[in-house]
Image 1 (tube, each protein chain N blue to C red):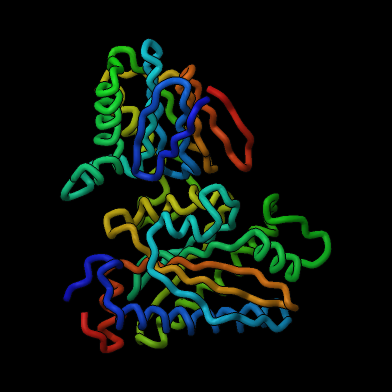
Image 2: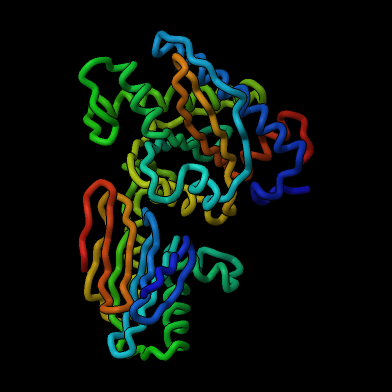
Length: 164
Length: 207
């Protein structure tokens, strides 16, 4: 019997097979799924912003908000459970542009794209390959990540479901 | 006391926001009645300072489909206004406005999109005028952008944009009643901290 663990906004968690991780309604936020197929440990982080350099004091709770610090924390958590970094493969989702909004004064428009870019940079620095991606566009996504086989299911209320 | 974030507001300051919300909601009901050529009643709005997670719960959970309208306030007061309409509210209002042949807001065509933008404009104007008149400040609003999607996904936008200010917003809950049919809409007001200080100062409230 598998158990489903919910990951909130600016939150992360990891489980062992056959448990399932879920994060609801990613908009411009990004979801990062990491899987070690040898130990069948799955991790999921739901980040809000690209970089911790945007914040003055990054404590542990703050660190989960950002792509750069959040992913590092997730990797550490998974390593703590026995996963090996060299085995990790990533699947990523989210980073949509929810509102078509044009304003010279704000960077509201491309924050989703910047989140995705920062996720990719951080993963590259950690030498974790991205093997699937469902990012950008203009709709919200709920992400399920299965500890049993590392499959990522993306669900959109408007567009349907995909499994990666 | 200096305000750095919305969760540092004191009771008096929150009361001021409540009053702004009351007047704004009253204006919105009047404007909607005129637009739909039909009387619309509004219950006394509930106004709370909530964090994003509570807002998402108040809307029925992260995966609830809602219609989001986002506008920016500019000039003396800067910040974001976001209207969150239950699909039913949007459908009722739009079918009253557009008559026969209107389907559902979920499959939104261009005509429907403009109509909902117009509703957003009128409602935003109602709230912004309440601030403008009470505090004697000049405020302009941008053309609204529309998005129909999961509540959580829509709310990620203000949550991200204002992550540096904190995770609290001013949440106004309006119950509209038309012909005994109830439907509700929600407004998020997120003034920049400096603008919030300006509003308070102009109203003679200590900040």
